[in-house]
Image 1 (cartoon, rainbow, N blue to C red):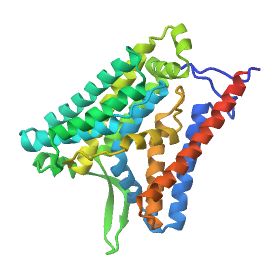
Image 2 (image 1 turned 90 degrees about the vertical axis):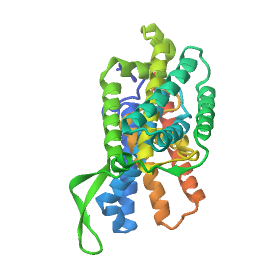
Image 3 (image 1 turned 180 degrees about the vertical axis):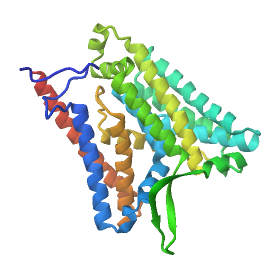
Length: 351
C-alpha cells in the first residue's frame, strides 16, 4: 500500500491519520488550540469571556482582518504573498471618507470606490507577479508603499465621517436571538453583530466552497504545490496566479470598507501593520508559506486565535504593546514549528 497520495488539487498529503490530509490536520490543530485558549480564558479570567457578546465583539472588531486574511491565504496557497493589503485598506478608508464628507458622495459611490481601488491593486500586482514573473514580495512591498503614499496625498489629516447615511449603516446592529446576557443592572441585553461580520462570514463560506469544490480552487492548490506538475496537467499557471491576486486585491478593498465601517474615519495611520496580522493569521490557520496547503476556515480561526490571545494578555494586566507582540511571536513560532513537522513528514512520505 502506498505511503502517500496526491489530492485532486495536486498537493501531496501525509500518510493517513484517520483519513486526514495535511491541510485537515493543520486545520484541526488550529481549531483545537483556539478552543483550548478560549476555554482557559473562561475558566481563569472571569465571567466576561463566558458571555457570548465577548466572542461577538471579537468578530465585530476583526471582521475586516478575516477578509484581508482570506485574500492573503489565497495567494499564499498559490505560493505567493501580498503585503500591500493593509495599505490598500487605509487608502480605501481615506478615499471613502473624503468622498462622503467632502465630495457629496453616498454609500453606493463609496462602495464602488473601495471595490475599484482593490481591483486596481489586484490587477496591477497580479500582472507583475504572474506575467512578468517579478518576486511577489518586491511587487507587493512597492504596492504597500504606493498605497500608503496615496493615502497621505488624498488627505494628510485624520478626520471622522459625519455623513448621516454612512453613520446609520455603521451603527446598524443585527441581534443574535437567545445569545444575550443580563448586565449589572439586571437588564437583559441582546447580543449583536455588525454588518461587517455578515460580510466576512459570507466571504469565508464562498471561498471555502470555491477552494473545495471547483476546478479553480483545485488549480490554486496545484500551482502552489508544484508549478511544473501543474503545467504538465494543463493548468494555466500564470492565469491562476493572476486570478489569485485579483481576488486578494478585491478582498482588500472589501476588507478596507468593512474596516471603514468599524472606525468611521479616514487616517494615514489606519490598518497599520494589519498585513502582518493577516500573514500571521493565515499561518496560524494552517496555510503554509511554501504554498499548496491551506484552508479558509482555518484562516478565520487563525484570526480568532490571534485576537483571543491579545484579549487574554490585556486581561492579565499586560497592557504594554510589547507583551502582545511577544505572545503573538511565540504563537507564530509554535505554528511554524508544527508546519515544519508536517513538511518533514510529507517529504518522508514521498520517499
